[in-house]
Length: 399
Image 1: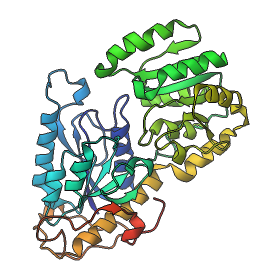
Image 2 (image 1 turned 90 degrees about the horizontal axis):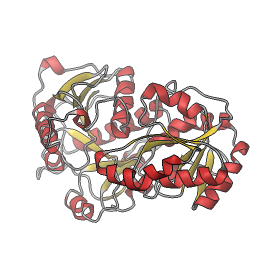
Image 3 (image 1 turned 90 degrees about the vertical axis):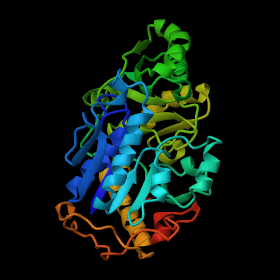
Image 4 (image 1 turned 45 degrees about the horizontal axis):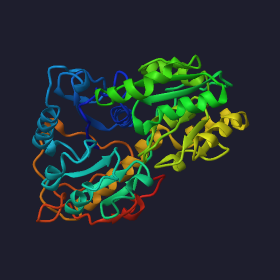
C-alpha cells in the first residue's frame, strides 16, 4: 500500500528530545516500512526515516530561531501534500485540523486524521460539526467524548517498538517524573508526593517558552528541596536507564490526557505507574496490575507505599500485549483498508498515477480496483458523524 504520513513540523521525526506526536509518527512509519508498504513521510529535513522523506522545512521548528511564524511552513506542507496526493492510496494526517479544507477536496484519495491533542475546547465543536464527514481517529476512547458528532472510525492506542526500552527488574530507588513542565502535567503535585513519601524525585522534563514563567514562579522555588533533582530534558537513549532505575513513575496530570506515551514507556521498562484519574489513564493503567489510579496527593502517597505489590514483569507483559508498535500498525492498517473500501464504493475516477510511483501490493493486501476511489460528487468523503469503530466499517482487531 502507498501510504503518506503527514507529521507536524514542530519537532523532527523522531524528535531529538521531547515530542510525543512526532515520536509516535516515527514508530508507525518505521513499522509500516518493515511490513513492506511504500511510505512517504512529510516532515522536517532533520528527520531520520527508512521511508521516502519529503523535507518540508530544513529543521524542527522548535529549534529554528529564524522562523517567527510556525504556521507558514505547515501551510506549505499541506500544499505539497495536495500536489502529490495522487501518488498515494491513503494519506494519514497528524496535523490537528489544519488540513481539513484540503481533506474535503481530496477527490479520489482515501484519507484519515489522527487527533493527538485535547478536544475539550468549545471552538472545536462547530469546527467538527462543519467537517463532520472527515474520518478521524482518536488515541483513546476518553479523548473523543467532547466531539460525539465527529466521524470517528476508530480508537488506536499508541505503541512503541517492542525492543526500544529494556525491562528492569527493579525495585528502584527514586520516583520519576518524565515529560513537560506545565500546569496540566502536575509536576508540583509530583514534588508534593515525593516530599510526603520521603522518597527522592528525579524530574526529566522540558520547559517550553510558553511555560517559562510558570516554571520560574511556581516550580523553581520547589527545587531547593534535597529530595528533588531537576535533570531537564533527556533523549531517547537516556529514557531506559532513567525509567528502569525508578521505583514508580508519577503521572499526576490535571487535565484530560489524550493518551500519555510516558505511561507505556514506563510499562515497557517494567515500571509501575501512579497516575491521577483523567482522560486516557483508566484505559492504560489497571489498579493493582500495572500501577494505581488515584484522585489526590494523599491517595498517591498511599499508592507509592504499596508499589512493591506490583509485579514489574506483569507491567512489561501488559506492555507487550497492548502497547507495541506492531499492534498499533496493525490497527491502522485495518483502518486504511476500511477507508479505502468506503472511498472506492463511490466509484469516482481515480487521478492518473505516474508509473514511477506505482508500488507492488504488500503481502496480505487486497488491492482496490483501479479507477474506483474517492467520495461523492459534492467533494465530501461520504463518512457521516457519530462515534464508530473500525469494526463498523467491516474490520476486526484491537481498537
